[in-house]
Image (tube, rainbow over all chains, first blue to last red; front, side, top):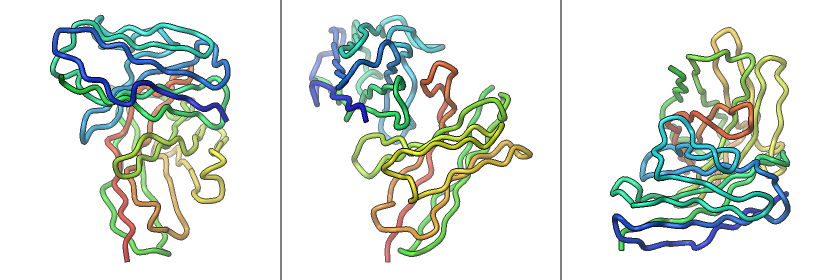
Length: 108
Length: 118
């Protein structure tokens, strides 16, 4: 099973600033990685798939990069609605699909 | 519009049987993979398994193999997740989600809260 590790666990950033979230895989997942956003009481929402492709309707301030074992989600100029929990997910080698433990992005 | 609408919240006792549903619309059900994800209280996301309704091909996470059963009814474009004997540790929100061809999960149901308590 591929283990996904996200860092940091909690990230405090001020509105308007940039946030950088990291995800590391225990072995290569090529570019088969997605990022999801989850706000309280809501289902996860797909932001990025195939490591760097924005899903339909996702604002351009969200960008993904990386391949192999190291990945980054960058949110430029944070908006109030961006404060949420973010999960990475690998789908290169399954079953099982595996998620990271999440990064909580909070207002500084 | 692609939609996945899940059945309502359930309160059950340990040992009970339960089957929850995920009614889909807006896409070709028989040629799409539908997955299930668990979120225990205050915890992260755990992938449970997935089904391809076209031929009922089903894959499970080793963590959930033998603990749950995933099924689908093509005639009503609905996927199911069932337990034969619930445990308190099954208390969680369960999400169904449609898988993109590339592998990510593009559209999610609203979640079903299952509470298991004596």
